[in-house]
Image (cartoon, rainbow, N blue to C red):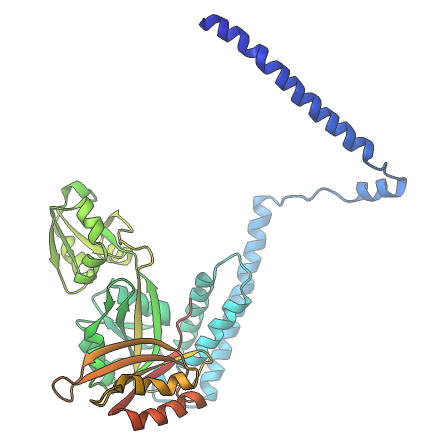
Length: 411
């Protein structure tokens, strides 16, 4: 039966193949018969237009080298004009006096608006951010405090917002970040305020209850967690170090792949990486930046349970800045102890069409059972609608504190 089958199979396929070939020939003949014969003039034109030639590799590289030279010349020209802007501002006390976050936000929005590809918005914004960072550093590099040590997500947020031409100050706690900025030892600080999966970082909100610092910017950082180790073998791992929030963000993955490993919470993911580098049976949950700093390998990653895991950071400084055209205002509102108090304090914004982006309550510092509300509203304090709403709010609330008006995060 096998022999018979092998003999008859070709007999079944030949007619189909022949039929297909015949149909294709017929279609080709029809197409040829319908085509209008080219005249002498048309034939001459067709002969004069050569087929598009694909440049060879050497030609392409030569053209790229020329473009690179032109880009470098333009960057140098931009740096010279940035120097002139600094001179036009006159002699200022420090680097922070040259920095204008509202101006940078406007420049980056135009970059996004002009982008027609092939590079995406995030890549282009990062390139222009680095150019602006380098130009500003000609005056003096900004000093930026962040929750350390080296290799934390906070440090990555610093680089995303300010570029790499800064002087980073890794600090041991969020409280110390506030203290260093207040004392003038840092120009700005970058602190985490909320995570899309784990919610608010309460220690940051609590600092605003007493601090006089102002919010001058925000950063949204997509957080990817990796399992890092010295040995690089998941089967060798007996204990895992990480920040408690990172453990929570990777709970399902840990339950599936490392159910018996000891989970040891530490102050930061970078500290986790520092400890994990000392033994082959230890690992850390951290970003790839920590792996580069502490000489570890990524055993697995990303391992966060939700792929949209994002942390929002606030940039804190000592002053308010002008509007950028797309801003957010953060308020701290202490309400009166009376029925409908929360509704009353929010109504001035609703009446003027100002949207509330976020509200969070925390125990206040004015007395027992007194609560403060952290509220984010779209708009800037120098805009008429916001100014009118705040004036009305002063009559309805026990106390109102403007934490900052700042550009909405870009890419």
